[in-house]
Amino acid sequence: MTASGTATVRAHANIALAKYWGKADVVKNLPAVPSLSLTLDGMRTTTRVTFDPGLSADELELGGAPQLGKPLARATKLLNEVRALAGVSTFARIHSHNDFPTASGLASSASGFAALALAAVSALELPLSRDRVSALARAASASAARSLYGGYVELGASAESAARVAPPEHWPLCMLVAVTSEAAKDTGSTDGMQHTARTSPYYSSWVSDAPRLFAEVKAAVLAKDFERLAVAAEQSALAMHASMLAASPALIYFRPATLAVIEAVRAARRSGTPACFTIDAGPHVKVLVEPASAESLRRALSGVEGVLRVLESAPGPDAARVSAQLPELDP
Image 1: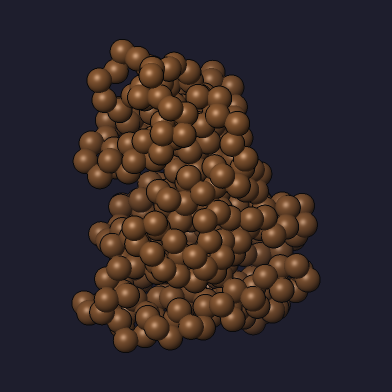
Image 2: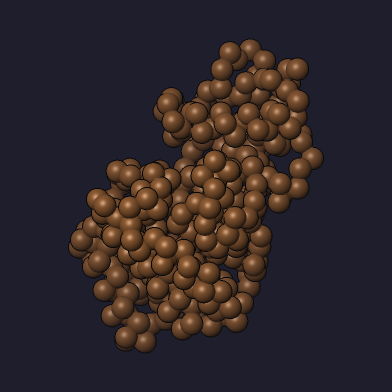
C-alpha cells in the first residue's frame, strides 16, 4: 500500500547527567545502565519527512549534503518500523538540519532520531503515544528516546522508552557547552560501547555502580540540591570515561582543552561558583551552572586555550511538530 504525507519536527539534544554507556541487548538496542538527562533548548535538530510514491528508495539529506551508507541505513531502518506500523510501503525523503556540530559528541544522534521518529509518525498520521514514539527512536539511538521529552528525563536499564522526571521549569539551570572541536569523532558511540564491553576490565564495575550514581543524580534533581548533583554527575562521567580508558586499545575522547576546562570548572567551584561538568563520548565539556553565574563562567571558559566557542542553553521542551516553512529546509 502506498501513502503520501509530510511533517516537520523539531527535537532538542539532551545531555546525560547520569551517563548511559553500554547495551544490555545489542540487537534491540536496550541500555545496560539507567541514565538521566537534561534536554537543551539551544541545540536543535529540525527534520522534514515526506512520503512520496514517486520515490524508488529512501533519501536522506543532512545539513544540505546527501547521505549514503550507514547514516541512510540507520534512517531507513527506523522508517521501515514506522511503515510496518502504518501498513504502507512508500519511500520517504528526509531533510534534516542541526544548528550545532554533528557526530562530535554533542548528542546530534539523540535529537536527530527523535525528530525523525516523530516526523515519520506525524507524516503518516499514526495515532501513537509519545511513549511509543520514544521507543521507536530508542531502537535507532538509545539516547534519542530521551529527546522526545523536555526537561529532566530518565531511561531505565533495558527500558523500551524514556520517561519525564521533571519539566524544564522545575529547575531552570543553565548548561554551557565548551566546544573544543568541529570534527566528527573517530569512534562513534555504538562502536565505542561494544569495544569497551569486550575489552575493558573496568566495564563490569561501571555497569554495577551506574545505578547508584543514577539514583543520586535523580534524587539531587528532584531536591534541587546542586552540591549533591555535582558530586554524582561528575563521578558518573569520569567513571564512564575510566571504563573507556581501560579498553584495549584505549578509547580517548579527551583533548588538552577538555582537561583544561575541567580544571577551570573546579577552580570556579572552589571560588564559590555553583558549577559542575559532564563529558559525553567526545571532547566537549558540558557545564551546569546556576543562571546568575552563567555569564561570568561563560567568559572564563571562553578564555581557556583550545575552546572554540561556548554555547549556552536553558532546559528545553518536548520534541514537537512545527511549521514546514523553515528556511534551512527549503529546497
